[in-house]
Picture 1: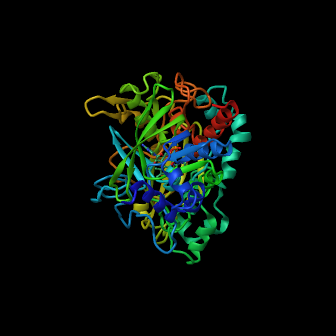
Picture 2: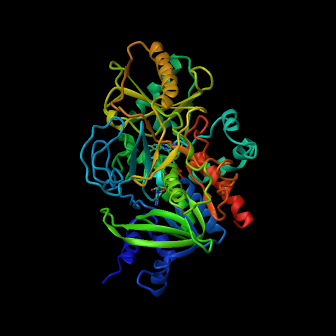
Picture 3: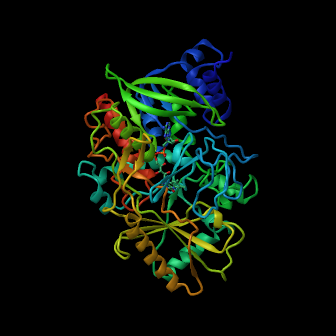
Length: 527
Ligand SMILES: Cc1cc2nc3c(=O)[nH]c(=O)nc-3n(C[C@H](O)[C@H](O)[C@H](O)COP(=O)(O)OP(=O)(O)OC[C@H]3O[C@@H](n4cnc5c(N)ncnc54)[C@H](O)[C@@H]3O)c2cc1C
């Protein structure tokens, strides 16, 4: 009988971009070394999740020679220019969503799909849809690539003085930017037909006397150029991004941090390994119960892993789910009561307008070109970015993605004993209202300055965030290096650390920077 666990690992070694390196860590498939490595269940460090926080942790632990396992619930997706790996709003596939029966996405009509381990989790919390990545590489596979630091003033308002902005600006942000190879859209790409909408967006804001500036992005501009030259099938230039770019147009973590982590020789990565519960054992080590999945979502079995150092990097939604359940079910009884509190939606808002008489071409490109920030003009400090809603990519519509610095509205993840689920218990539409008003005030100013343009209502009935942050807030539930208070050997290194808001920016750069700082401290202190 073939061992299904070994079969999964062989499958991983044969398919994905990280395959060669994973194989190198494990030894030759079929060899004793491989079998021994593949069947190990105890590691010094275990990292849950391979997104921004998890990838940084894996690299820094690996470089420090710490024997580390990364478990990731999602698949490792191949980059195959000849065949699109991912679905999109115009090519619906079962692999777009993490175990959903129908699509649910801004600008997309609900369509039945078969539940499968797809690339995007969309969780219907009360009065808020939360979206997050579910793949090797986490949110970097589905995100829009914007790599932006918050302005100093708002960072300092949100974080304790022990996290000085100068240290982030001088060290942690540049470290992450260099690893991700982030840079602005080159002029020739900006001037090309699929980015007509970006140039129009800039012009419309200029007409309203607003100043835009180019934004750093992790899109691979060489691949985008090859798309423009018709040398590879199009993806980024036809509005794909939210469900991945199968041709490698997005330089996600499977091309930066993760291969570097695996190349240390101290890190293993196991995809399609979904953590179901975490807890502390009597001997002080941590227990991590994992459900192993096949690519079609079938459950292959359950394995209990143990470790001395446990890093939670499952993203805000799932780190809170795992930790709050562990506390309430008595597996982590010493977890602070503050864990689960201080959640925020980053003040996210989508905003569209149409200019029916201004042609913008048949399709629009997804990478964001420009941004603007308004600290005082619209009630709440407001960041806007030029955006594409893929369902509208062929219509004369320009889209804005807006974020506000909202320091007031927060939510709590609570355990529901009847369903044994952790839910965002107290979010209400009122908590998104101030951000919506700010985005609307911005939009009205742009519409006034651009006669002939009209507001468009997104057919999204549900408040939505792709930037869930908080719940295990740094300095409150953890120390300034993500060590969970009262739980030696337990760390949080993902978006849950942010104080419910990224301070007028998209969160990924700050998540990775906080993780870099935390790991530097943890490695130096030996724990
Ligand atoms: C459509 C969209 C566009 C976005 N665009 C941008 C952008 O342009 N710029 C930006 O900065 N941010 C953007 N974001 C947000 C960004 O993706 C997230 O802030 C970031 O990925 C969060 O990093 P993280 O380390 O907290 O977790 P993630 O990157 O979400 O990684 C968590 C990982 O843990 C895995 N996981 C979860 N639960 C389990 C479990 N139980 N067992 C095992 N593994 C598990 C997940 O599958 C995932 O791979 C966007 C998000 C979306 C949805």
